[in-house]
Image 1 (cartoon, rainbow, N blue to C red):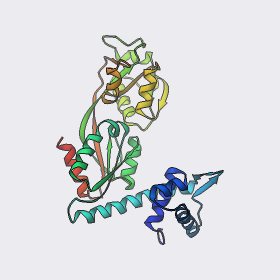
Image 2: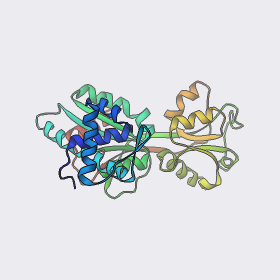
Image 3: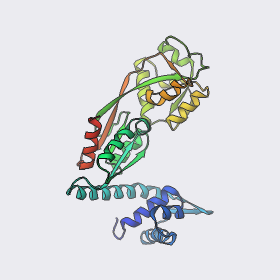
Length: 297
């Protein structure tokens, strides 16, 4: 399938696809715009497939291009993993480790561990991508990331999962909400408020659904007013007075301290943060060292 393709052409294609702009992609890769355009044209001409639609002064992926993007990312990730293995023969001094994490973990828990790893191994670049739990699992399955960190359940027999940390979910409301200031709240009262939740596929949402089941409730029984794609958007909507939400205590902490949110006294179960890796792919030394760094903190 990849006969005649070069890694450089794949890098150009991915950069253009991610930016939807040839000039900005060329600048990011330190290439001339003509060289980037030629790489895309060569891919399209060799395989008789249009990868981008030219719309006005912009470009956008075709359906073929979107499918190819998944494969191109995976090939580049495996090439970097191969380079990392070779570099490790002489010690952990250089290479690239690709990691993907769900939003809560990537924003509030993982960064301090990545900093500690980089301080000890400055020659190894760590590339962190962010997605929801379903997207992280897909990236590890496809080989686009060697390690994935999630807070939700993952049902993929190809992936191994183990806990690396614990986190607590909390229910929060704005200071004008009728639950603010309540000493306690009965589970049956959860249906009395509007809710702002993360999107389907989010680990935060799936853990909340499990908590509801423990209370004898289903998500369908709640009045979900908004579904938003990030923790920050959910938090801001509730701060603005839109109902209640269930989010990580780490996400809520700054707003609770500032008085922008109120912690509702209904305890939710703790949840585990899990690390994922593909069962059939051996850990690189960099991945093993990162995990040891995390477990040592």
